[in-house]
Image (cartoon, rainbow, N blue to C red; front, side):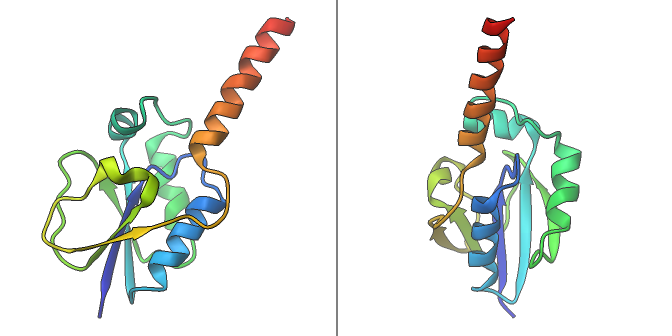
Length: 129
C-alpha cells in the first residue's frame, strides 16, 4: 500500500485543487490531505484565507479520493509515503524522509487568483458607493 500526502490551503476550493487531489490519488492507494491552518496559510501566501480553517477541513473531507484529512502547520512533520507538493507551493516543502513528487496543476483557477478577483471587486464596489 502506497500512502500519499498532499498539503495545501484549499481555500476557496476550486478545480485546480480538485485536479491536484486527483493527480495525487492516481499515484497512491491511500491519500492523506493536510489542510494548512489559517496562520500557516497567511505565513506562506501573505494573506489570511477567506474560508475559515474548520470549514476548509470539512470541505476537503468530502472530496472524492481523500481518505483522511489532517491539520498541517509549520510544525507538521511526516515521514512515510509519497509527499505531493503543488509546483506553486515549493516554499511549503514538507519535512521528513519521504519521496517528494511535484504536481503541476493542469486546469483551473487557483484560490490566489480568486482572492485577487474578490479584492478587486470589493475595491470597485467601494469606489462606486
